[in-house]
Amino acid sequence: MNAEPRLPHPIDLKTLEKLAEVAVNVGLNLAEGQDLVMTAPIEAQPLTRLITRHAYKAGAGVVTTVFSDPQATLERFENGHDASFDKAANWLYEGMGLAYERGAARLAIAGDDPMLLAAQDPEKVSRANRANSTAYKPALEKIAGFDINWNIVSYPSLAWAKTVFPGDPDAMAVAKLAKAIFAASRVNLPDPIAAWREHNDQLHARSTWLNGKRFPRCVTPGRAQI
Image (tube, rainbow, N blue to C red; front, side, top):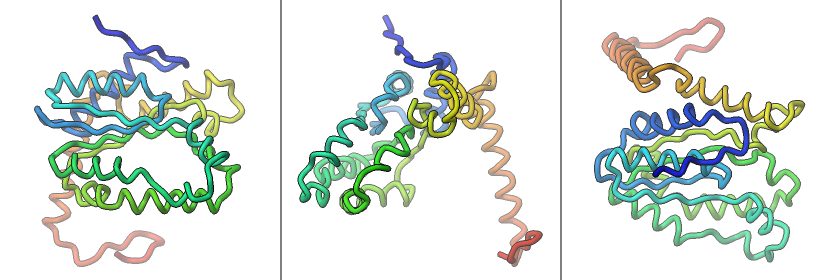
């Protein structure tokens, strides 16, 4: 029996499942036997569970999810000793890098509160970001170099929704953000996988045509030539 995720806000579960299916089968094109490393804000559990379901249906080896907790992050900045902000979870990033070297796919779910650290000491935020960037760089190079298949999808978290739609009630703000995410992801269409395949085919055809023309330069109205 499947335990359906409980959605705390008005997010249509059927459409959310379409998003999960598209993320796995189109965005990642997950291969049978391939492991998946996923990161997500803890509020996005309904989506991570659906992605996990579809990843295993697609034949995934092992799906591992690492959650971020906004309250835990705030605890660090409000109570952590000064030396804490020059450290990162190197062991975690080393493990992710090893997973990528062995062929794991990478999926990030965006949905963190964009204003979470707005009231925190900017120097501490900068130091913590720098430490994380340094620790994650070797693993990130695998992603930036397209050595692995990776994808990013969004989840309509309450904090993000209230940032985008500050004047709306909570439920309405989340519903509006969900609608925007679903439209951008094409999962509001009857057959989103077919829609993405058609879109990708068109992009491929246009890029092939442009490459075949071998234009020496491109000039656009009102802009410098490329």
